Length: 447
Image 1: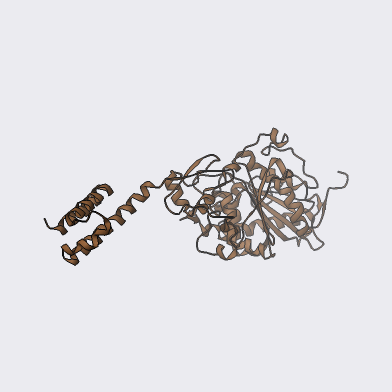
Image 2: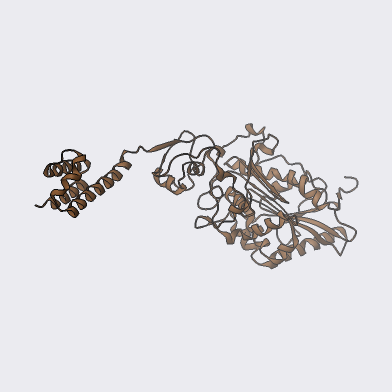
């Protein structure tokens, strides 16, 4: 076997068997040339053709480089991160310069599954050196928010520390799903006059001299809404519509533009008969929804009459959508986004609240609220519970721009969901009542 063939065989052996055999092959070749030390190799190369020796040296050098590269990953120790309170996969991924997808794959974490303080997260191979100082990614501004894909925080599920539950005792003795009844105030009892649902009208008054009046159409939970309404409002008409469970029946009922048009016409007719003003006409129109009722709101806002007529939108823990790839279904969200942009400019009013409930198979109210904020170029501001929110709710985030408002709350059970109806009192008092300046209604004399 020639000297060159022996060296090539040694190189192949090194690749197959590792660095130990490589050095043995190197020593054998050195003995053949009579070079027992590395410094003797250049002089001994004269014993064989120059190009052959050069190829041998280059081959061995390449072997050394390849084997060292193969050995390095095995020698590197896997890095493990212990989850701290309030951390998410997004935070950890940014810190170690890796992707959330890589973290999930490495640790077997399914999409939507929360992580917990104390949990050990193994960092995938790569550049795992933590970033020094504060994370600049958390401070990105409006320009980044306009990129094709959403930032990680937009579609992230609520943090594990928001997954809380409170008993009625912890809520000051209040069961948000079964609150005390304050009566009807200045309003008459429910009337079936509208084409859909029922309505309450002031016993007298509530219209201008020309017959103009304001109305709120509320979808899902009409009695709970009425309990909050009468605590604050003294003139606008309230229409309550319940169509069953799920957003489907609401979306289906208002899929035709004629439904909304006929509903307003029937309310105007009922007010005209009640007040004796034949010219009674709707002035300000608001639409509000809790839970599944958003299905009707979305349809109304997608129609020309709804876009022009509706002045106010209130969504209480009730805006969901499906997914399209790695983000939300933009077609489903478009009517709400278009309206949010109008509210941001101050032309309309919109209030959105969300709990920290994580549903299965579709986007949570946290994700949809964050998506709207992201599309407007913003980011919610974290805050601490303030103790003044109704029915034991704990505020965790907020965002306001123009007349577009978002409030986020902790909690993931039924009572937390019901408690969002309790927000309506303050929304009416702080925002809608001053905005509408509705004609005042009164009780009948002698009552």
